Length: 200
Image (cartoon, rainbow, N blue to C red; front, top):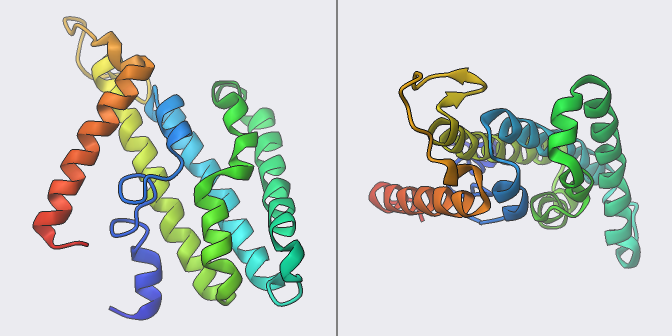
């Protein structure tokens, strides 16, 4: 596999932010009560991560080390503000559901980590591929957790009833303990699968 392809693919499995690196756990546990909310948060993180990686990679040689982190936070905060305003204008239901977790994207470990560990050390092309892989990885992860919690907690996926009227929802999955239970089971399954596939 080429180096560029590896930069993209690592975020999907080997270095998946949610299931391998365990980053961004607060929004993962708090807002994945439905597939729609999980997907919405994932796309928001994806957008901020992609735009931030591009800008930070471009300015990396012009920012003095002693003001590096404040400069990165300013860049990230700019795109978070754009995300917040766009969601409020076009998807108010999602904006209301995500609430405080939208502005908290500024200090999301995934985004700060990629800025510091990758974008500031690599060119724009590699930084874009890194952001795409990590962004898709986190979006898929949050959506998956949301799908499972919504399916068994409400009998639906993306608001569409799947289980029928006879289904008795497991209400616990819509609560914070349900988030921990779902995430724990998924982590166990992914760790088992990674071990079987030889992914370290």
